[in-house]
Image (cartoon, rainbow, N blue to C red; front, side, top):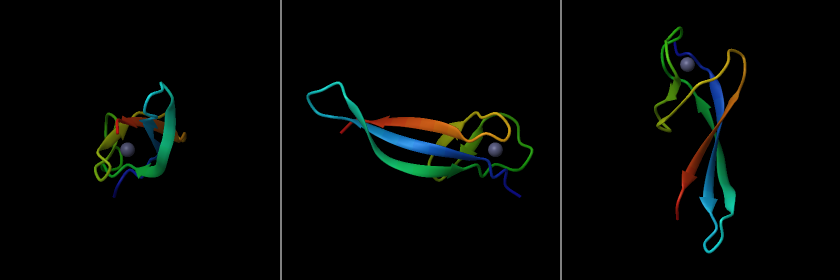
Amino acid sequence: MPCGAKAVLIVTKSVQGTTTNVAQRRAELVCDAPVGHTGAHTDSRQSESWDAEAGKVATVLRHEDP
Ligand SMILES: [Zn+2]
């Protein structure tokens, strides 16, 4: 049974010629490690891991350069 902890992934991209970062897309992360696992939550499909307090939804930022 997977852990199932959730987080929101926000992918940002810089706007060319500026220092501004814009949110490009959002995705939901779901931890697929076994329930009761130790360490960070992991979503292997999105290749992301995150720490979160129990019962809270974390926000994970990923920056991608164009
Ligand atoms: Zn987890």
